Amino acid sequence: MVLSYYWDELSVMYQDFTKYELSLSENILLDYNSIEKFKELEELTKLLDPVFFANHSLDTQLGFWFDDGKQLSGGEWSKIALLRALIRKSEFIILDEPTAAVDIYTKENISQLLNMGKDNRITLIITHDINDIKFKSDKIIFLDDGKVEAFGNLETVKRNKKFNDFIKSKTIS
Image (cartoon, rainbow, N blue to C red; front, top):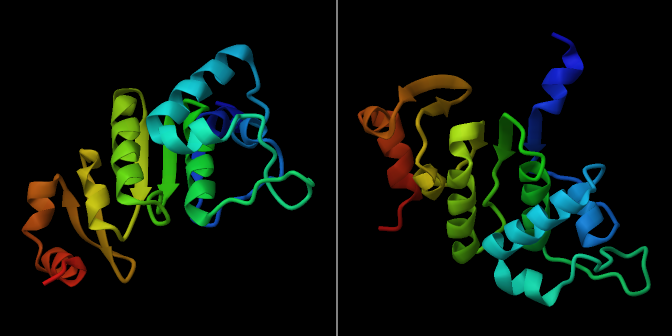
């Protein structure tokens, strides 16, 4: 197979994602701009954060380059980066800390969005947030200092002492 095929089937949301100073819709759709994708984007925005996207039209200009450009918080930019990865409907998605900058309400919405299409793709979530495990992961890879310490479903991984120590370190006592 041609390497370009694999690139077409891969979407990535980096922890340090790019913030394009374009309109909200251009920022997410990039070169996937079509009526169908625009309608799909409208639906995804309603699911991800209905309040934010009700207050910002998809034509809203983002960034400092525009006189009327809207300045966004880290969490708002994070939502845009996530939508950018999801809108492509790739077979393989890598999400690096997708919930690091968002509130609890948005985390739950992200969980629901990721579960909606999970049967049609492979999603790799890299996270330090134990709550991200509730994305109904089929498999969990627990790393410690770059070494695989546990692999399997949640029940299997829970039997690992280092995993349990990690969970305890993240839990409020």
